[in-house]
Amino acid sequence: MKDARDVRLARMKWRASGLLVLAGAIYVAARAFEAEHPWLFYVSVTAEASMVGAIADWFAVTALFHHPLGLRFIPHTAIIPRNKQRIASGLSHFIETNFLTNAAVLQRIRDFQPARTLYAWLLRAENAEAVATYVTRLSAYLLGAMDDERVRRYLQQTIARRLKSADIAGAAAELLDVLTENKRHHELLDAALAALDELLSRAETQAYLAGEVAKSAPLLKWLSDLFQLKLDERAALKIVEVAVQKIKEVRNTESHALRERFDAYAAGFVRRLKNDEALRERVHRLRDEALASPALAAYAGDVWDELRAWLAAEHDRRPASLHQRVTGMLESLGRTLRADREIQAWLDEQILEGAALIVEEHRAKIGRFIEDQIMGWQEHKLVGELERHIGPDLQYIRINGTLVGGLAGLLIAVLTQLVR
Image 1 (cartoon, one colour):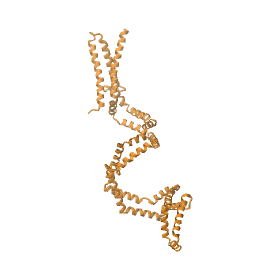
Image 2: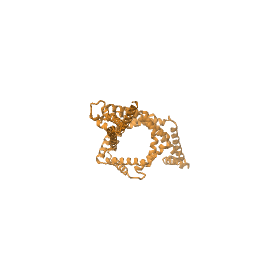
Image 3: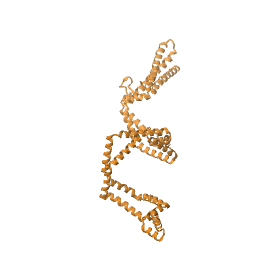
Image 4: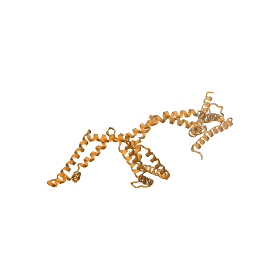
């Protein structure tokens, strides 16, 4: 079955050629009866000029794509196939410098309004559902494909081998170095002290601790019984109060001695992880014991099976299913993005900045790709594609040439007769 463009091209060629044949038939008929009807002179002149115009434009249009009548010796014919290199280079350069400029691409992105378009797209329930379906299906497929004993055994062996050769102690030391740099770890200490302070400030906590301290101090209990005083409870409460006061001192004093001791302990532990071979050996021995533990392997296998079963239920629509959670997450993202103008502006800025870098980096590559694609085409393919796209419009040149040529010939004949 022919392409619609091929059918249109063939139809337009028949029309243009048919008009030429018609002009030729009119010319023959007018010349045959001109002696009997002198006015047919103007008809024959018009038809003759139409044929000249039609033939000239046929030659011009045909010469763009082919050698007219197959005559290769005629210069400046088959212009397109003979200039394929220049056309490819010129077209790629034109696209590169006019369509792929930073200004043009960035303006198109600004008009597109990426953040606004994104949240509007996400807020449509069918779009979030579609994305969630694809994510669930892909996850289920990947986990299903990996649920092969050979794959599981390979992954277990590979991961175990890598972990056994990994310097866990060194990695932990590097991590702790980062965590303790610029006293970042004091944030954790402050949080722990704040929680402990809040807990010890409660009356029920203090009463409980006082009771426990009193139970653990027989001497205080004996003195309380001897003098019939509640010395044990008072002393215990005093101890708790002192503890609470000390915690507040540590929280409010950045240079407190306990903080310095905490820093010294953390720094010393990091040094030991790096340099103390006994400690490093103990850490690595714990690592090897954990990797060799059947309980850990069984636990990891159970978690893997449960995760795979959960993800494999791609048609599950319960609230706890992956599908529903992804759908809810995408819809929530759309609502949040719609409500936050600042994050919209930030997202648009990041896209524009990234697009500028991508365009600048790949513009020349896209131009070369277009040029290489055109150069890779066979000449008949290049000619065929161009002729299918612009050929029908070029046939109008032949039609117009026929009509305009005829009118020009008639005008010249009339003016000639008037001059005589």
